[in-house]
Image (tube, rainbow, N blue to C red; front, side, top):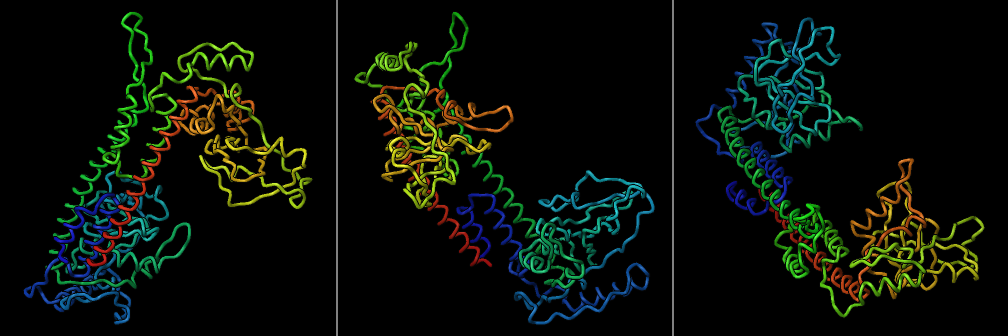
Amino acid sequence: MTLEMLLAEFDGLIQAPADVEKLNATILQWAVQGRLVPQCADDEPLGKLLDRIEAERVELVKSGKISKPKKIPIVKPIEIPYDVPPSWRWVRLPEIYHSHGQKKPDKTFTYIDVSSIDNQQGVIGDDLQVLDPGEAPSRARKLVAKGTVIYSTVRPYLLNIAIVDRDFEPEPIVSTAFAVMHPFSGIYNKYLYYYLRSQPFIDFVELQMSGMAYPAISDSKLNKGLFPLPPLAEQKRIVARVDELLGQTAVLAQQLQSVNEQRRGVHTAVLHQLTQPERKTSEVSQTSEVSPSKVSPDTADLLFRNFDRFYVDADTIAELKQAILQTAVQGRLVPQDERDEDAAVLLERIAAQNELEIENQQRPYIPIELVCDVRGGIQKSKNRRPDKNPIRYLTVAHVQRNWIDFSDERFFEVYPDELEKWRLLTGDNLVVEGNGSADHIGRTAIFRGEIENCVHQNHLIRVRPSQDLLEPEYLNLFLNSPEGRDEMLERSRTTSGLFNLSVGRIKTIQVPLPPPGEQRRIVAKVDELFALCDQLAGQLTSAENGREQLLEAVLAQAT
């Protein structure tokens, strides 16, 4: 496979920033394998290049600019990680660079620390400290010059690598957290830089580094590393090609970001249109009032049935489901039916049952206590033995959002005369009281009679609707909607900053109460749309898995 073919494949496969990173990694891997540009017979033979490097090393030692190097072990065939072109040679890193030594700062200097590196661009930033000797950190020791490559040996996986690309005034000194590599004249510093960022070298470092909180590789272990050395002219051709290709992938990444931002904008606009009622300003009073639905049920239905055109990210499906619930409890998901019981008649029934006066509204909000029996659960104690009169009971851990996990069976003793009082019935909504954290407050699910005899502990609150007034599924839908969750969160706040619901607080939650017939239609419509969401999510997951497998196959063929 040629690189052009690879790029053509990637054009259809790239959907995420991680894909661009994989493409960049592939380009670097090709580069250091000698597969990115052709070899040229006219290039200076590598033997002459190595002779020039050795002559330069000897001259630097003679002039006192560097110390006499230790003997460098030869590269054994068993150490070679992969094959390179015949015109290349594997050498050890110390064969291709030298350091500039160390000193304790004795005059004003420019300090370059690991935080000074832009590890995305591979450059040294402009915001550098200029320090006096007395201000020098203990790590400020290593000398560098223009052209030096610096490599952070602390948390090396972050790839804090850069080329000293300019002269600094006052003199630059870098942290001892860097390995300092000043290439000999036959080594192109940018080729060295790209190799240090390539996967083969990353793999080598991962095997050599140690430490848990701040993994690091010592200079001595780093110097065991191998380096695939091409002729100098080929090094420059490789760098030019890598620069060109990484420029193209940068453009690709920007295009991908733009497309994803557009999709996210459409997603946000659709959710806003679905969930925000329109506000009109009275010409007389200039006061703002909420108008009927901005999106009619027919329009909402059309949007939902075409949302596969807007949604290509499975992560947004959860937000879409919340929008469906919000639209549902606002009375904007299904049309009203004249045959439904009038709201005024419904209110009169509720008022009569509770011996109260309730203000007539077109779409009333009713405190839960007027249409539900709200009760806490049984307090677990050591006196209730699980081996005597054992009855299944549910805990907070069993109740997830909108479903109950029955896999973890738990029992405790329930006395015969208690069972009828505490036994759960089909349609009971179970609400998590909370444990001080806002994340767990108000998690709600319906008990649907899965277990014949089952009770619940006191940290779960049972909300049992009067089924001639409030459908259990509609109540569950509301409590799990953004509006219902906000209601519970607001009521759960305590002066200590913790969050906790109680039977009394749940009783005061205001639930929007359409006629029972409309409640059933809302539940049916939500079920239908959630099924569409799940179907779309499944399709997206399947497509994403297929794309990733194809991507990995292309990369495997490429490398």
